[in-house]
Image (cartoon, rainbow, N blue to C red):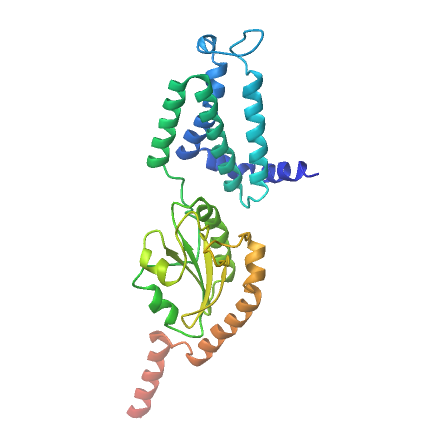
Length: 297
């Protein structure tokens, strides 16, 4: 059953996976992930490779290569147990496939290993994974606007994600956060984003470390009247984030989003009663005409 659950989940998201895989970033990543397999199996190339197989067949994996691939497959399975989205699953497979390729190429020929490692570095520096571009109700802050927006109305509750574009975890969380904003955004409950990778001063002020070692990205902070009420993940005394899973269910439960949403809807109704809609010009003109006719009489 433990093996069937991820399989069914993958099949369920298969149409969405196809859309991602057709993007240039993922096409190049998949090609690099199977580079060693292509070299080892391509006729005319594999015959010139070194092998430790007893039968001398250089177009097939030897026992050491199979051992390396099996070991890294086990690591991928362990990492994917904590993965939330399909992007994270695919990202883990691609990442550790590249690691396996580096090891296998260096073992085969140091020159091929150096060439592949150089290609990986160039790819990492020049190609970035595609950002989420779907629908959302999210306000993007800058270092000059965040304080003003959070303190503007003390009755409004803000949930703000502190993120960085270079963080794979933030990229995977983007679609989940966007879905939450579509479901719960209203006049009294708003969603925002703050790029701490770009605005380092804001990162220090709100005590959200942008260092990859701290594992604090993404961080969700709850504000009311400009004051922080809670955050996830929490941070220990050493400045490292306490492990926490950014699933939609966890966020709804920890931040009491259903209760906050109900209270926020009452605020929206109160505003509507306090400020009734102004009648349109077409509705006012007939009354003015009636008063004029009465004066004439």
